[in-house]
Length: 102
Image (cartoon, rainbow, N blue to C red):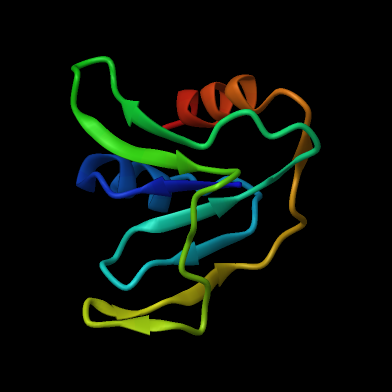
């Protein structure tokens, strides 16, 4: 599963305090945070901050993500942080805990 972060403020916070998780940069300058879930229940969930602003989305079972070293018209995808891929059986809780750090 991937957490796709596109919001500029969230990107600044993520750059200043990156989590220890496998991360790639998207062609448009965002981040993909990768994790594994043994029981995927999220397919595509939009992430909204406390102010109601869209900051990204979770892409899971049935969704697709572009993987480095792919390129799109927006730019090339690259690996940003190589780290172990965390495993969770609680994807909603995992996403909430990770986003609480932003």
